[in-house]
Image (cartoon, rainbow, N blue to C red; front, side):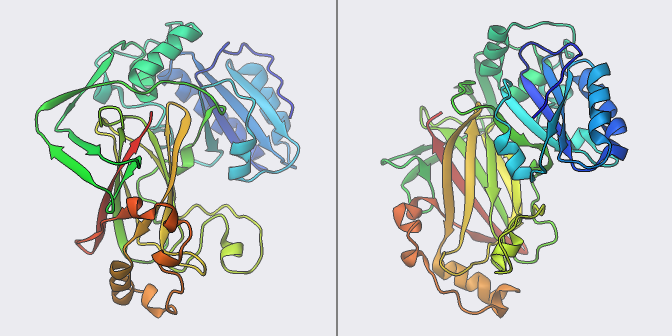
Amino acid sequence: MQTPSPTPIVEVPIVEIVAFGHNRGALLKSFVRDLHSYLSDRLPPVWLLTIADNGSTDDSWSTAAALADTLPNTRAARLEERLGRKDLRFRWNHSQALVAAFIEIQPSPDFDRLLAPLIDDAHRHSRTPIERNRRFTRRQALNAIGTVGLGAFLAACASNSTSTTIAGASTTSTTGATTTTGAGATTATTSTSAVTTIDCVLVPEMTEGPFYLDLDLVRSDITEDRGGAPLALTIVVASMDGCSPIQDAAVDLWHCDAEGIYSGFIAASTGQGSGTDDSIFLRGTQLTDANGQVTFQTLYPGWYPGRTVHMHMKVHVGGNQIHTTQLFFDDAFTDQVYAASEPYASRDNRTTLNGDDGIYGGGGEATTLAVAAAGEGYAATLVVGVQA
């Protein structure tokens, strides 16, 4: 991978935005210039823009190199082979930034939507303008992020508060050895309309490389064109130390569709091959709000041979992947959903129930969702206790 950087580069970037694409030379110049202008207007100078030429055969590399020559805080990286979205993220291990955010080069991009995880609305989070000319040392930048979280840091770049106040917060405590609470775990929950003060817990300790964030996947509605029973899934991320909500935790959720097919692996899911593809249905990421909460609009998952009905979830806090789990469903309730809805009802009877699933046997009761009917679909909430 070649990374020429003739223009001035920020010494220690807090955020590296990686713009990637394959044979996108015709779009590259306008996209990168618009993105660079957007970042310059809304962020302090602690970011790095990398143009990743993803194994292209057109003239995109020469365009990328020319842009890196002229735009500050910009470099170009040439990939000798074309990498899929997933492989590109996992092979991007040379970054010194706390967050490596990936954005695909595309026509008419909506930067307000795509970059929302990195640039919170200033009028919602701070009364002070972005201090574009303020310079940070690495220690100051790390301390700022550790205190207020990435979103607030990028929005204001001025806060040094050591606590967060949350109105109408709900606190949850867990008992037992498990770190995740679900329908099968013992929980004690209290709600209050008073203002609750919590200690900040987002500490940017880096042990496994940067915190990778696929900006094209940051979304609440992940259904796309899939059919099935609607499911509103709310995840609350809380610290096991004091059972307080964690803000700006990244929650990744993915699962198969009603036919048992996974995006990105359609051929393998249908028994027609082993290659990957660029589909992203029923995959998404969200950052928790001040109450530690995210809600995904998705579908009740289907099944495939050898596995019980389940979802996959990961939680990242302060750049660390701190929790990986699978979510399960009560078998009797699933039977009711399948019998009442298409395309589940037209499929053969599923062959694997919770009791037959080895992964469920490793603690699935603790992450079995308590699902209930809600409107024309279903809803469930899970409190995830983590060691931050």
